[in-house]
Image (cartoon, rainbow, N blue to C red; front, side):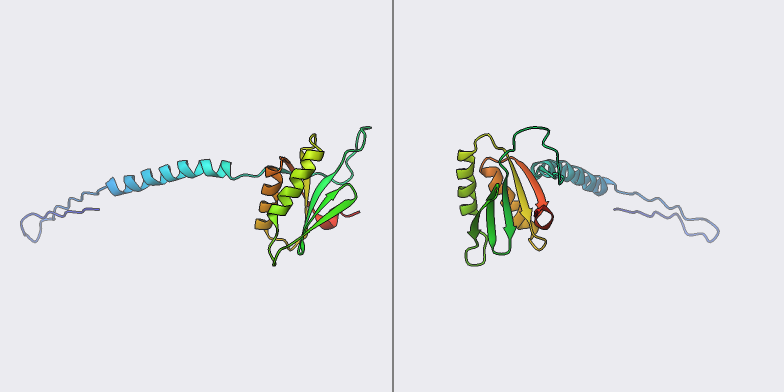
Length: 157
């Protein structure tokens, strides 16, 4: 911002002439950069979105034959892949979740059930959000794009 003050001759009764120039170029540059930044980041907010549905308890089947339910239970000790009433545990390795084994197990399930596209992710309360996102990424990479996120305590019969 540039300001210039010009004064006239020095009489006591005369008022000094004050001319100020306000430089708006830096302000316009700042606004242009902010608009460009907002336009660029608006694309990333749409790309980094997970589509997850929440199914209610007690949904009516509508006379259809019972379908195979596939779920992944995320707990402190690792994962458990649940197919109907059968559970296959995937323990954690040295305190870290084993996403590679989970992906292999889900790909094997997808090969045996090629018509299934939905999967439920059941989580305990203390599981971190990053763990859930990586679990959903493993499920989507295995061919299950329709994900449902449920509370493990509420989903238990």
